[in-house]
Length: 282
Image (cartoon, rainbow, N blue to C red; front, side, top):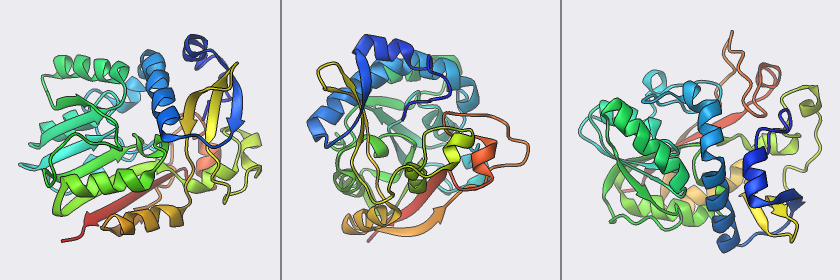
């Protein structure tokens, strides 16, 4: 959702797309895909300018709490492995994986984000393959990958997480790992605010109506979907993916960065990120 602490943060994207307000209403897959493709293309430069230094050129940061794959080792040893990053953005995670010996492919819906990914490849000399793709329709062969991962990419923005998980399971080899990080579902009940106003419940946890930003005609310009923890677990199981662990990173001592609705104030009270660690069934 929008960063309410900085009303100008998304001004350029909102101006380009004609965003005029917010709606909580049903959104079809086609409308969500079109809206989010346009949004991330329009916002890619500003997003990279604001968060690029924190994410690094070739670092794997799972979440705003700063948990790194170098420390967490959630994907295991990737040397020699075929790895797919879903919703890669500027592909810093994919470059980190490539630097550890993985054969890495990184995909994203947004050409604007992939432009930053190509620039990052040139700067670092690390060159994972970059593919523009919709996460609900992955253009990869079945059983092509040992590992798939996503750090706040794609999962909250697709209309059917069931379809996405089936696609991930399809492209994974038996026993392959699927690890993804999303905003913790309990955050849905609070305003998107890192300050004291963000500590008061305003939205029902069980209301799964999508959050949409819209233009003057009511067409979506940005869409995000809420799922409960149980929704994620059931969708994973239906796709043939076993949940091995659910990690809720704690806010680190001394970490003062505010990223959207993530902040030290909220972070010390309740989780902001959920990381699902899964295995494809044999």
